[in-house]
Image (cartoon, rainbow, N blue to C red; front, side):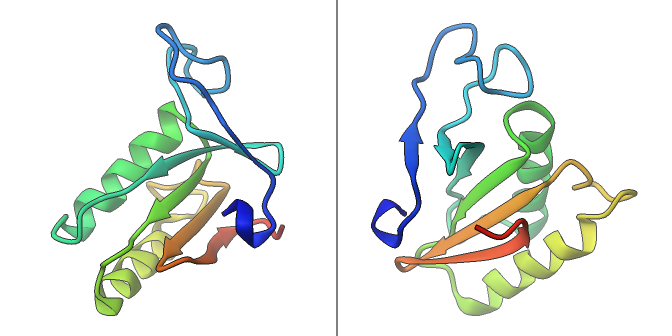
Length: 117
């Protein structure tokens, strides 16, 4: 992501939390443009519902911004995941805490939800 112009800082994994997470004991992965993000890299055979559930849990405990790495995923599966996220990211949805989602796929970064850079 740094080679795409994003200012990135890796955060350390610290026993008891690194001080950047939603919960005191959590360890989100990055500061991107000064904002806290957690990274999630599911395998291509992970069920879409499980991907959405994991992102939901991360937005409750780790960070309100997520980087989702979907390298080697078929395009149909990526579409299914992004449609699910857009459907659930509303004030009454499971992903109501999600502020921003960046998808990384084959070196390309796509903002699926949230703020502009």
